[in-house]
Image (cartoon, rainbow, N blue to C red):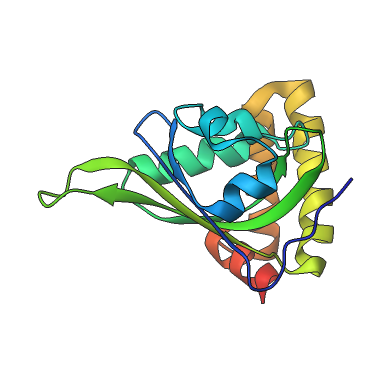
Length: 161
């Protein structure tokens, strides 16, 4: 069953460099259906929904490892199998010397029309991925963006508006 975020909800979490959860706000914990002790030190992909194509996470990791922020639509799976969509902003956390020490993610309610669009795109990416691997899915995403004449960032932000 789908859970719809409230407009006022902001889900916040922090991870270490390997993506293990070091902090989650109350909404993060509540939406996930897990207890805080189950989430802390668990890999963030504990929430990964099987409808999510790997290419999205490949792009996310490329960006944040290069100290670049990224926005993405993510379908998360709750402990009980329910799911919810988020519009995520993920950024590296840096120390006073500029060294990345972890990652910070703030998620909010996505535009409903954007979710309809992105769900279809993700289904195509996942199908391509199952047939030809992540590289095939990546090529399909690149083709979609090129066809629209948009960068990934432009495409994602345009959907949210």
